[in-house]
Image (spheres, rainbow, N blue to C red):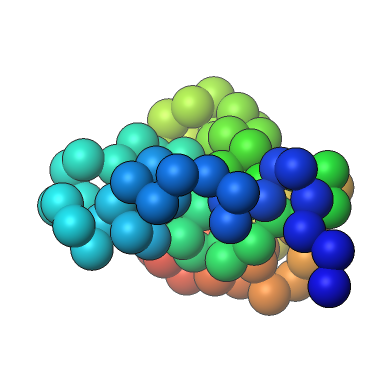
Length: 93
């Protein structure tokens, strides 16, 4: 399996969202890092954190605004399928 340059697996362990959460507290993570944990993975050309930043941008970088988006809204983002969209909507409910 080929790992892209954007893969979080290529990051230093201390910078990876999952490891960061395990070694620190959720407060130590940015909203995009926390959202990336919900998304699970990114795409070949985009890490989960980069994808999470795009998702947050749709909500004007505001979690309250993001919570107003529907599954249909989120599906318009390249890299967001039904499963990821449902996870985000459910988590922000």
